[in-house]
Length: 366
Image (tube, rainbow, N blue to C red; front, side, top):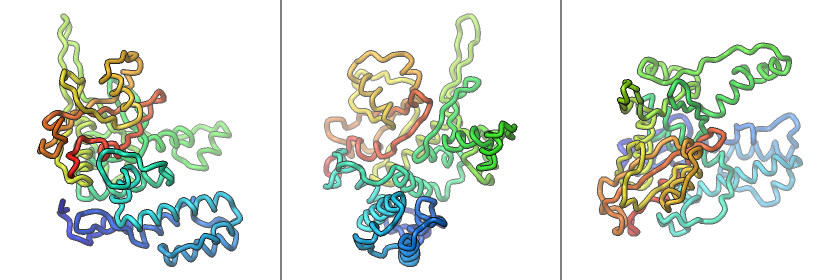
C-alpha cells in the first residue's frame, strides 16, 4: 500500500519519518524522547555510571551497550528501566519501522496473520501504547476531524466510561483520575487535598459540533469527553418508542479510525459500522476489541447464558465487512466479522487494536 505522503516526510516533531510504504522509521531524535522521560532521565541521586550511560545514549541513542554496563548502575529501578529501554530500542532497530515491530510483538515468527503467539511480550505496556500513539498520530496527521482525533485516543489510552443524562461518555482515565485527585493542580493540588482545602473544579467538555473547532486549540485534548451513544430513544407515550441513530456518535469516528488502522497495517480495505445487536443465524467470525469483549463474544457465540449485569457493560458491537471478499479466508468469504467493545467491572475500557491485526480471517497468502 502506498501512502499519500511523500517518502521521508516528517510525521510531526517526534523524530519519525515515513518510508515509501508510509510506515514510520525511527531516528536518534525519536529515541531521545524516551531518554527524556522520567523513567530514564537522571535525578540528583543518580550515580556516575548512570549519568555516563545516559550522556552516551543521548549523544548516540543507537550506541551498543555492553552487557557489563547495566550491572554498574547502583539503583535497581534504573537498571530495570535501562534494560527495558534497550530491549525496546534494539527490537525496533532490528524491525526497521514502528509498524513492523508492533506486528512482531503479537504475530508468530513467520509473520503470519493467524495470531500465533510469539511468546511472552517482554517490553512494558507503556511502550506498546507509545507505539500505537505514534502510529495513529501519523494516520491522522492531516485530519481536521476532532471526533476522529479524540476517538484515536482509545487505541492507546485507557478510558473511564460514565453514563450521564442517557449519554455514554468516554473520558481519558489518566486525566479524570488526576483531576479527581488534584483538581488539575498537580503536586500543589495533592498538598491542598491532604490539607482538606477546597480544590477548583475543571469542566470536562463533551465534544460536539459546538466546540469541535476549539478542540485543536486546547492545551490538552484529553479534557474532552467523547460521546459513545449510538442510539437515542424517545418515549412518545401510548407505547410508542422512537429510536434515532446519532449522526455524531463517537462510535462512528472510532469505526473510521479502526478502518484506517487495518488499511495501514494490512493493506486491506474494510468498512466498520456500530451495531446494536447481532441478529445473524450464520454468524461465523468475531473479534473482541478488548479482553472483556473477547470473552463475552465467545460466550454469546457458543450459546452460553450471560448475566444481564455483564451485558450492560457492553459499550457497542460493530460489523466489519471486507470491501473485497476475496481477501478473506475462503470458508468465510463474504461473511461479516462482528466486533465488540466492553468496559470492565470498574467502568474502564482498554482497547487492544492489535486484535484487529492478528485475528481477522485473512487469506493465508496475504
